[in-house]
Length: 251
Image (cartoon, rainbow, N blue to C red; front, side, top):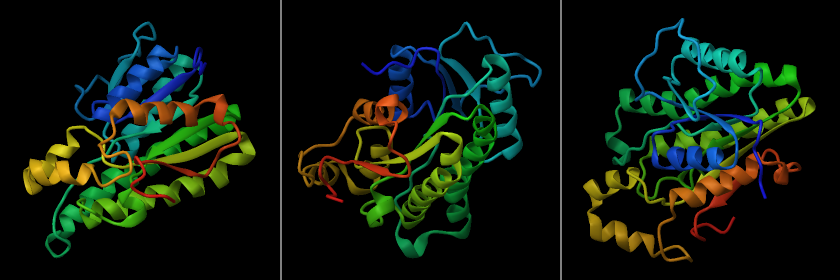
């Protein structure tokens, strides 16, 4: 059995389909979970964390470097450590290549890539001192093959996540810290509604049958893959990108 008792886990984008499923699973497995999402109310800076609650819910804008540093410092102060970071905050867009504006491009990379970098950078500073820890960064199948229905800016941001994670793994390994990414294929979350609005339900359903399993994945299936990579069962795995796509890509 995978056991996260006494482990402190930070999850960004925790209100999303994958994020919420991951939070529920880690809580079930005994972890102390800190859910972070931009949709949560902004708390007063001086308000202390209440470790009795599980999961804790904290407002976080991952594009705000100062806020990222503040939140991570509060977590470490409250619990004395930070064991696992799951970077799930992100947005999705489907738009023709030639129609993506500079503003849209910048926003996509700010949230999906720079935001992950900020969280990894600040968390790593603390993990290096404790000489342990683990990162699981959410990438995408689109980050490996380019946009299928996702826009080019989304695909580029997720490709960046994959290489960011490899760089992180190389930096972190001497301190006993692991870093991996995970590349989901199509997952049945609210993000699929973005595709349905543009392509229609029929087309989205047809695409779901194109992988070997013949269906979309579930958030819970991604959550279990994340938990495995974050667990001691994966203690010799670092710098990899795990495909969880039902056979859409045989990499």
